[in-house]
Image (cartoon, rainbow, N blue to C red; front, side, top):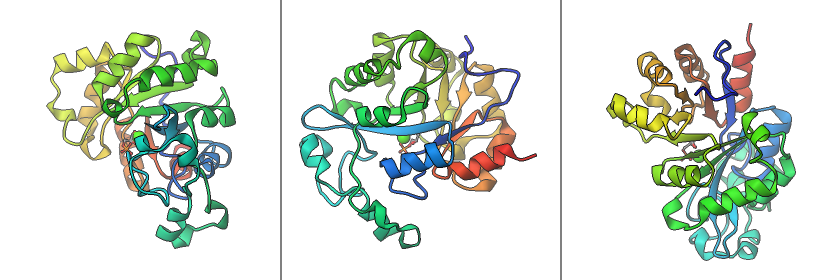
Length: 270
Ligand code: G3P
Ligand code: CA
């Protein structure tokens, strides 16, 4: 079944703001999400999930807080209150002085609930279950949060407001068992795409609507093969104009990018 939000007659190149507009602002903060959503009008806000000691889902890429905050240690060893005391913006100013802004200092790690409250049910969310084996109950908590905001209503899902992605097939199966109507995307580690048999692609298609390959693996031929198996193709993480144009020429359905403004401009040319 073709996902209803994929128009077969029209080539769509979805702009997926990877960790927000993370080429310009600290990833997974309101600064980064605001820029992609309000200023750049990206199609999707990409959210990576981790879980706190007290069971709260937060937007963060790494299992540890070390890289993107002024703290140290595992997210799972922090309560939400402890995590909220950390500065999630200053690291960016230090690492990228040419992009630094004073308003990034002291930014907080947002919860998933806060993200959805801020951008509402008309925004589109592309949510990744990160390290699901570390966080029992992550999928249930995710669906509870989405449901609380009305994002799992059938008409809402049809409009494509939520996609759930994971490198973990087990996590995607869990989500599917909880609610088979939620569109899912299987992320693929580098090198995997061309090892998949036709049977494996068919089996995957019973679970997911699309594949998120490492962009370096994609060719015109394997993009076509994925499409002919009924799968949409959203490569990660595509940050140069040349790669964006090359991948569009293969017919990808969108890309994850730290520079949503650049991909949007390319798609709006001519
Ligand atoms: O979710 C797509 C892409 O973000 C996967 O890689 O490590 O940036 O989450 P990562
Ligand atoms: Ca991700």
